[in-house]
Length: 413
Image (cartoon, rainbow, N blue to C red; front, side, top):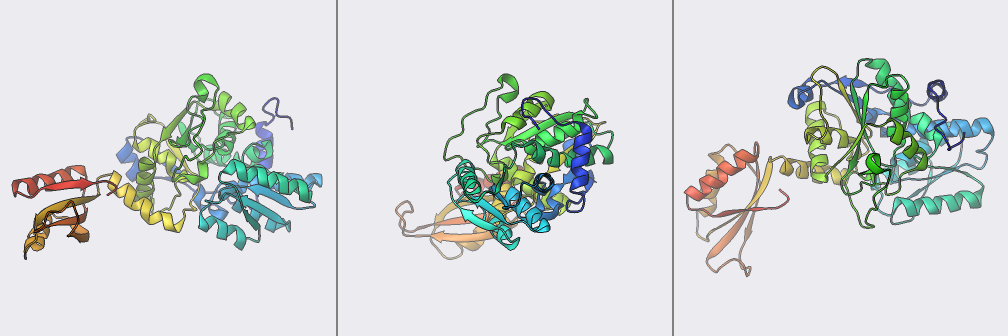
């Protein structure tokens, strides 16, 4: 295949899906009435978080390995660089055909994904502060060992594998009007865009990237990529890609209608909403599409369904609780208050009574005495409170004021 022009026809995309049918499972496309009512249009969720290895990445990895084997190019094993999901896909696909796999992961890769790769039989190398640095290490290992290097997104055979998601969407929902897709390096978006636009050019395809790592911000307008700070951080680690691919750029320039960005607060809220409305766990990268809809960044049609691709569910267990609390705080359902009162018996009970009058639940209470900002004879009480919404919080603060109790909000819930 040549990278000078997009070399993938619809027949090739369908053939790619057939090559990996024994390993890759079709994933559900679920209509969600609750989200449809809340957002004002029919919403369907394409649950790639239920794919084997917990992510769409298995599709591209399995297809690339199948192509390498057919050409006799994988005799010395395969090497990949990934923050986690591509690595797991490569490890699973390699194990299925008896190939040795080495995956190079950045030093800050989630522990859950590191252990998953090891459990799948891959040799894990932790090296590099960024995905780009890890990729350089992986390429060097591949050259040294004579192994095949599997790029996570900038490869036509990887893109062809990811296109299976788009094929399944159109087959299951022929009247889809819009498809919203997470965007990092662009492999998933490029694959879906090709699979969809080659059949239904009228379907709107939208990519969603994380605000902190958004190299595609102006790409559709001027073809350029934005520079990303070295220390950029996002809870959507699966799309924390600072240098998109050349192949993916060709497809996205031709076939993607819009690209939007969302912040981590919106992403965390979307993770919480998915848990509540679907009982389905999405990692940060997997929730960005819903986050964009919840923020009103993508218009919805009341007549034509919007499909939201939930690309993965491999959330780090240590991050889930923090993300849920962050999402609750961001949506007005969890707040922290600092209240200063005289340090006398009964004050805390009276304060908690005021909270109870508003039907709120106290999650945590902390006393602060003897600190420089707290005068002698006073105590500062930190309350973490579960609330219905932001208006509910305002009611409590106003009630405190009317009772002569001074309260100030603390950041971060």
